[in-house]
Image (cartoon, rainbow, N blue to C red; front, side):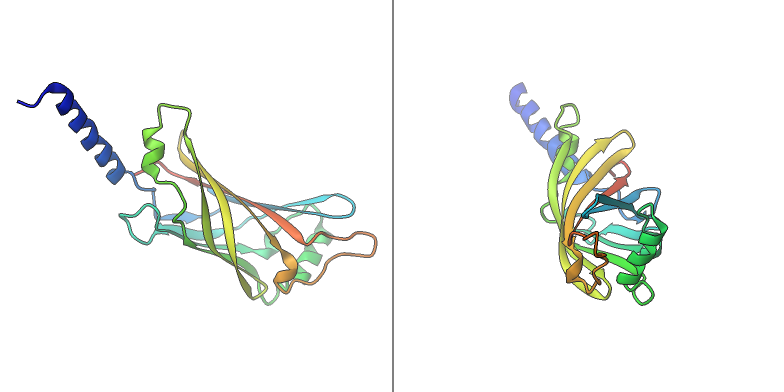
Length: 203
């Protein structure tokens, strides 16, 4: 007969393995304004210009359903709905981004190898360690120019599931965007971006 401590250890090991195998992100999922937000800001001579987006559409899925790190995403953000709380500034932004020819900003996620495994969040559910960090890699296309982009993320538990928050930055002058600065107000070339995506409970 196997001693009780060994049986208990074996049971815990089996339970741990089952949790790791069972815990996968609740994907695929459609992305829209109800579960996804993208905000941005850029400094200027006068003040910090802050903006929001809407009418986001896209999808996030697992390339391999058995691999929680095989996350892929395709996100489209229409420039027509960029909002900086100034209609004249928004119109100028659409002009310099050539929105008539390139109406969307598109992000393609291709590598999530550095993101945490969802089972690690489940294992720490009873503790305060319910947040993990990672980096998502992909490409962003603006004004017909595509460049690599790294999104530094945190994944946190919530009552309804999980929230993925990401931050990144890019230089608008690397995307064939015209300089929107005017003589008395210069715009910084670095744009800071914040992304938030709400996911459901783990499967």
